[in-house]
Length: 256
Picture (cartoon, rainbow, N blue to C red):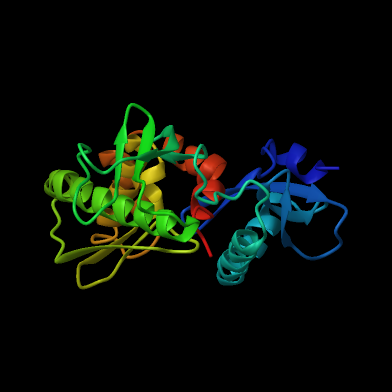
């Protein structure tokens, strides 16, 4: 096994990048095909163990479009699977906000500093929700409204700084709910972000901001693109790993 690799003193390929994700390459007894599978809660690429680095590089390169499409489909299926710990909006439940767990607490609107049009405020790791919201659906909608409001304020403060740093201009920013991505960038300068990202710590959010802004320079995930992202956000690798570890939980939050 790996005789071709030993002769050339080359290390086996252990990871491969698909879009903005780097997936582990797992060698198996497969004969002549590659596949994407979930193992231990993460997506990996299964490849024939007899492939040399040269063979594997060729196959992965020629299959990049298929791998990208398959990864998106697999992630969508994972998101659609029932989550036993799904947030329901009951008093005493917890969820994440800017990297911290907060507890849902019933609060009298009188005397509380609720931002309009939200019925929610975060105070000392408590998510205070207007007592007038009696149903789970009403509370979920209120939390979503609050998160969107928070995201818009955060972007208005932070995005211009990174745009100036990178040397790009954007034309519009919108916060919306995605089912399988954190943001998008359109060639004409439209940026869009997933409000569910605001469950993440600020340093992870800012990585996604830099990522999308760099697409205004490179509309792809080439080596030049990643070099630019790393140049302007040195914690890129750590942020990508953090998203890989926690993103599935965030993306499923308040999904129908």
